[in-house]
Image 1 (cartoon, protein in one colour):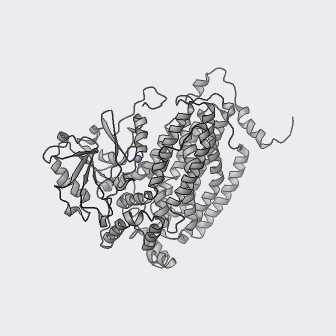
Image 2 (cartoon, chains in turn cyan, red):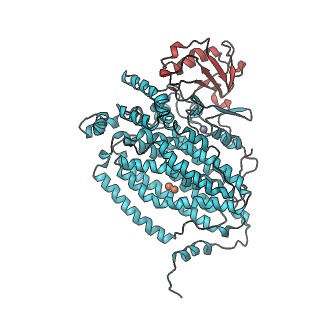
Length: 510
Length: 120
Ligand SMILES: [Fe+2]
Ligand SMILES: [Fe+2]
Ligand SMILES: [Zn+2]
């Protein structure tokens, strides 16, 4: 017996190709039932190039080292009362949004990759997906641990998985992933592996992680660093699956193009939450949504799609709309949450004078013209003791499930309405992207669990909104929700910092 | 187009059939260029309700917090139903004038341009 040490490449070959066997008493189609129904044609799995070669033993060793360091930082953060050293208690609302809206997606990604990691005939693709699924499970665990310390000192963290399944705005990320996971394995890979992990990931993670760094949140920053090397692998897998499908058969090109159009639009709509987080929820700003969008989408996607042009793939269909919306998106999103701040599990507020000036500077074409007067009115109402909350539930888009707060870019104060009739019923949408997605697969989206309609059908607890919010959503009313000003979060924060109102402190600090 | 699905002739459950709303239908109402209300609003309302009820109960309930609400000249208001110009009949029911389940009604108030004219 030879005792020779294997190099990584040989080890990986043994882990993947060499563990595969010939199927002698069952048909291939029976074993890999989901490989062909989407219309994707694979002629030769041996052409699959392993995006990243990592064997189980090196995976465990490497991740264990990373996690040891990570948990040491979490411990230090807790021991040093790190929660008192963030810039301002308002910041913590950004990570409430992360824990309720994003961390459960890591769990969904774990489920999704574990599932497709069984469905592909190519063993290399199967192993790569299984590896990613392990990463995603670690991500959800480490994120929960990173944020659990805040749960001891701030409100709104305690019911995050329950809320993810029920609360109106969380139905946006949830239904996005449900849509991807209920698609076939190749579409899932375009949706999550390529569109989300490859194209949009920097727009999601950089703002949260740099936001944490700029605002003194060492726990979250450290999580970000520890996930970075995983994300690099996920991006490589996302790109490999696209290239592999496109190289396998020319009939795959139009299918892949349609999925790219769909999933970049779906993903971009989910990122509405990130846009408002960047521009409104970070006391110390990193960059504006517009700036981030220009760097991480406009520039990066343009060069990516130039590369993919040789396969016949074009710029995603609705990219132009997303680009047009960049000067409005975050303001429209924050307005939605300010309107429905009584129904959210985190706090909302009006920007300070300085923050308004920052917004004017970053959005010279839109902020003063469309949004500042609205905010000044809301501030006036608040000062008069009549903080504005919208008394009626909003109309939602059938596809993205976001309240219809987006406007037509030619007429930016006019709501964008789109409608389809299908099988004798009307369906309403926020955009051409969302309408086209519905029109292509209406039988899927007639099933949308729209929170407002569910409330009106009586499926969300009692008849009163208090029952829906308190019992069904499990929001601690008057504690987790409403304006930051006057919240128990603010009160505790002021007590830690010698009763100085947070607002004054911010002004002094800069 | 049919959904690409592992079962043939895949049919999805229609979650928002009008039968599920206990005798009501859903009506959406939006006030053009008044984005202090971030999105159009949704109401459960009887298809047998006269339009007058929309005007006298639902619309004030939703929009009266706006400083311009009291200034609206309702004779000058321009209405759209599901994207088409339309003139409501105050005494006819919603059903009688084609306002069916999940219809969107928009109204514009010429001359009133929102807070400081900014469309809010
Ligand atoms: Fe992840
Ligand atoms: Fe990832
Ligand atoms: Zn939409």
